[in-house]
Length: 335
Image (cartoon, rainbow, N blue to C red):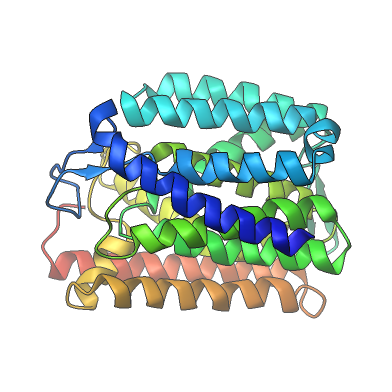
């Protein structure tokens, strides 16, 4: 039954995204190229509406208990989705987004989705106590925007998200968690169908309705997975978007720029130069890199102390910072 639902989501997404692609320009959902764009022509956006409604329609019909048992999670996801739709139509301010994320994360806490501990490192338990809610807000906002920030190449955000959702599906399967399996599998099916339209050269973009919703749902699954895996594993499971965001923000801060200012200095921009402008090769490289980090996060958690895994992750960030900085200098980019 569960796989039939996923097939239904895949097929319905194909139809819904086709409708979005056809009618988005008439409704004003168009991505117009600017100095930071990687595309040269006006492109329909808002395909997130297509795969999100396909997921909601099928799961509501086949597994209605998902709606009834996790009411606050559903409300939170819908809030982020509507904000993303509005952002696709008319850009909203960072302040409004932050308010929505705060309220949505508070709603998650009503379904007992909070980050209560950062793990045990060299025998020290980093429990959060009363800081759990504000830290969860920080983590959810950060990771949701990390997915939004890697949505800069045709097919990249969808491909990386599919890898991460697949990991959470595996964790859910291993621990007989139907909620994680349903939510992960549903988004995998929807994103695979969307990727048919979004693979380079893309004929439609997911937009913020897709990237923000996808990032938020990944955040929900990440918090849910903390029941089964240590917190350090999440850094590896979401390594590419997390490292990209940390590196870009750090570079901007060190160069005296606004940390929220847009540029073309993200990991995917710089690696595309390495691969001579080949988008497909760039995405394949980053996907394989993400798979490698995921395997570390899943299979070394019971072998190596979390403290060493944290040190290794920090070392990777420093290594990539230096590597990407050198690539940017060779390109003479103002990063």
